[in-house]
Image (cartoon, rainbow, N blue to C red; front, side, top):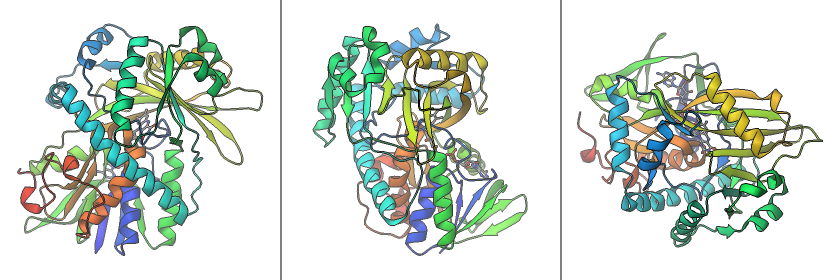
Amino acid sequence: MRILVIGAGVAGMTAAYSLVQSGHQVTVLDREPQPGNGASFANGAQLSYSYVAPLAAPGVATKALGWLLDPEAPLRVQARLEPAQWRWLLEFLRCCTAERFAATTVELLALGAYSRRMVHRLMQREALEFAWAMNGKLVVYRDPAELAAAARVVRLQAEHGAEQEVLDVGQCLTLEPALEGMRGVLAGGIHTPSEEVGDAHRFCRELQRVLLAQGAGFRFGCQVQGLLLRGGQARGVVTAEGPLEADAVVLAGGAAAVHLLRPHGIRLPIYPLRGYSLTLPVEPWHSPPRISITDSHHKLVFAPLRDRASQQLRVAGMVDLAGEEAAQPARRLATLARQAAAAFPAAADWSRATSWAGLRPATPDGKPIVGLSGIPGLWLNVGHGALGFTLAPATGQLLADMIDNQELALDAAPFALRRGTAIAPAMATPA
Ligand SMILES: Cc1cc2nc3c(=O)[nH]c(=O)nc-3n(C[C@H](O)[C@H](O)[C@H](O)COP(=O)(O)OP(=O)(O)OC[C@H]3O[C@@H](n4cnc5c(N)ncnc54)[C@H](O)[C@@H]3O)c2cc1C
């Protein structure tokens, strides 16, 4: 089939890769000048297959009330006269029950484990250079009660195959000596040795290189304005340069995907959660963490990114519900830099940080949306939220298998647009 993929972020590029492997003629379209320029540009770099628990957790609502009054909190809501924001928040609050949290965690763990297999298979097949490393992840806690709650999630995850261990302060410092500066405030941590890091933007560029060699096409600077429908079926897209015809269309447009479906009466439950990152060059005299660290108190992730030529430290975090602009408010970036530098003062030269803001395409329940859209011929690979780099290799393969009517490697019903429904056309979301 001739398939157009809208969006050259991790979701579009991984779907394109899987579709090309099944023999389809794929063209990827993006309004940006190169792949991975949206949310996939300078994200937290975590391939965090075992750390998939959703943001919608029991107790988050109470915690968020305290955060609302704190300008330095990891979560900020800039209230807007925007029904989409309020609807998303209400749906998010409904997902914050213990039952839904546990069910979603288990579903995402299965997807994460499948994604790990897909990343490893991809790396075996293609020589990709994207600063990938399996260096493990240590999530550190300052509050003993939070550590105890995290240990309960570890027990739940262990029942579903995740290998994680709870460490005391001494064990955390032995594992990662760069934590020395936090010794006085730490309560302990959770270590997951099998977690990985990599640079998402380079991953997208490397996939572009591979896909070009395998015959896929790319059109950059190409704004998709709408869908081309014939007899109610998606038969291509309309761009500023004219229509492009195809047999099927995959929508992987990140946070902006909502706009292409709205005129057709289909509401994607996606809202942009803005986050920020800093990328710092690491010199031989610096002492960055060797493993991936998450500071649970400030909700910051630290990823060492190494390749043959250079070494960088990526720090990312914060969740701002503030509309669709990827703005970089000086105050938020200053808070991020101060909290990060306080955790690892000798990790890098903090005055040389390059800042970035991106929009996580988030669903209220924290699960991506993969499969039918409600319009025959239009397929969805959207809503990956805070875990797109981690989960896109899995959803891309699932989507390709759905399009080819192949047996799926796992139950995809939890990731359908209308959650829990099968992937048969009769179950598509009504307008
Ligand atoms: C601060 C931050 C830290 C993060 N850290 C991590 C992490 O450590 N690990 C992890 O797994 N995930 C992380 N994420 C989440 C991850 O980056 C996202 O889930 C992922 O990048 C989403 O990929 P995507 O392909 O869906 O969207 P995008 O990367 O945004 O790609 C969508 C593309 O579609 C294009 N597009 C949209 N509409 C149109 C149109 N009409 N016409 C043409 N082109 C269009 C856009 O230009 C864009 O390039 C983080 C996100 C942020 C913001």
